[in-house]
Length: 446
Image (tube, rainbow, N blue to C red; front, side, top):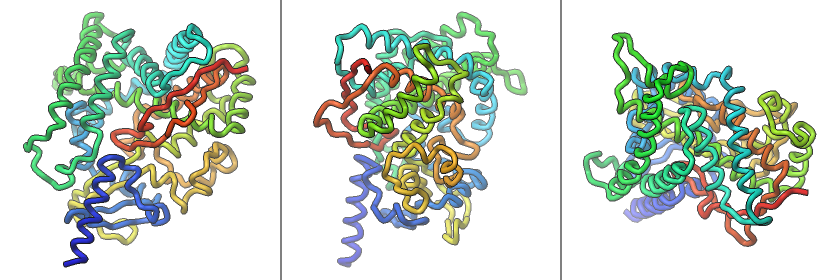
């Protein structure tokens, strides 16, 4: 009896830590183990840290591992039946419908829009007094939100970007935590206090989203490779258009996916560079050599090799999507571990990217691990910042290019310095953000 009480107490303590900050809840031993089997409040949980196991769950047997209910609950209120949430035939149809918008052939046009928006933000910085301070997580989020709206929806947000920012921040505050109700398997119809706050945030979010869609319909978008046009002009096999609610859900999904992760990556990269002056010096040297004093173009992207390595190493240490939750729909086996139907299967990119078996000095910020010849030694499925398999992020190539070009523009002319004494704590909820932001002094670089 004493042992059972102790186990229950430990499980509850673990859940309380995870509810506040998921990345703080992983025991140190997990960073050395390949497969972990846990019992959590009577539920079987398997944590997969083995690259072959990651491939099994996310790629080769992805059909057996749909997203878990807890993942669904965190996103459905905001994204409805969008690509992040939907499963089966609907997900497949929608993914096929919107894929042309993120084809690599579209990148040159997108690069020009990214650089233009980046220059507008930097012009605002230049207009402020030298050495001003700003929370870069907010400035970068406003920037990437404006970019995704322009390139995917043909819509300039302007001041409306602040309304979207505030609404999404409120939604994360209400839905970003791990909820005990989902972990305990309580019925979905039971009321949760956070849901009312979440719905209010979504209503604010929708005011702008519906204006974007209405503007697209009003201008009768005909560019069949533009994301919004693909949705508005879609017809199924019977010639029926996409349901308006689903158009809304996909716009919300691409807006969230297309700006949040890039903004977070730029913030973490800025902080890492300040704390690693040798890396920052090499990065600035590359950018100034490649660009000189001009704005970057798509042709510069493959030449910014160290800049890309900095971005990739930032994504390793601070992956914006820090956990993937699945639930087995059939009996299975992974690396000799039995996976009964109904088992919750978790892959934490936070743990996987810092795992002692797959990375040398895993806690060290070392961009050279993504440069030849060392990059060839990286385990393919030990690095999954964009996921893997059928549900890999559609905008992977766009997001990488955006982060590289914007980072190059920022570091060439500006030095970012964290406010002295400000604590930096990664907070793992819906995404991986600094708990208290990143207030940084912005000064011209000599």
